[in-house]
Image (cartoon, rainbow, N blue to C red; front, side, top):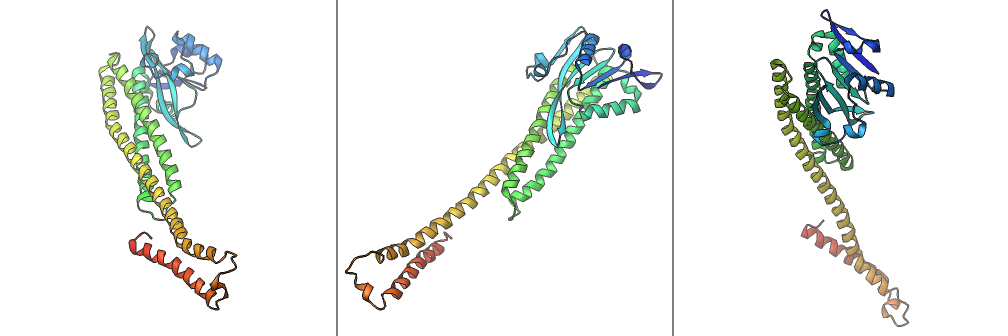
Length: 312
């Protein structure tokens, strides 16, 4: 789906005619078709990277400047069917317009489309619009970390304080927290690299450059929180696994004690279960109750001994 906006007479005008795209201040393409890809490539006079190239980690393939303007491939966090995903967005920022192309309709870009309708002045400077887009995503990442911290506090209570908690379920939640926190970190690092590149390019006006520098400081402030959450998730994972091991050891200890307690009675029963002709106790009237008594006593003595030692 292609969205195009133009700043005209102090208002935001939606461009619907593909022939008029050169008048647009911002072109946003979500889930582009082949025809839309060709149209955008011809407009920016540059072939946009394919999915594999957009996901490359090398800075040279994700950020560069040519005669057309600034080219970025940056990550945005969003949820797909409840699962956190990072989607790469191809950005081309020229002096005339901002072009964004992405395979999924990212919420941050949907929000920016709403904002430019309400605040047409955002379309005056393409690089300022790009800064506004990064402001939206950095704010969203900060909110995500805050929500993650609250969820982690609940999981921490389950692991460390709730005696009846299902630790297996807690481990699943911790794995989800770690996955989300890792994707947030990847987006923060990617945004910092891209913002630094745009800021160093010296193509932004002084007010816009100040916004970019402020965003960099915001990211630098969020990264320590991200690291703290990583450390807390790691600690809780180790604690949960330790508690699970302790519970398993208790179960094994019970089986070991039971085996030790039943060993003497088993030995006695085995002896008197032998079919020898000359076994004096077999003809003794008190032989049977005495053997039962000996088996009970021999089973109870190890249990009493283990309790005194504190092993039970």
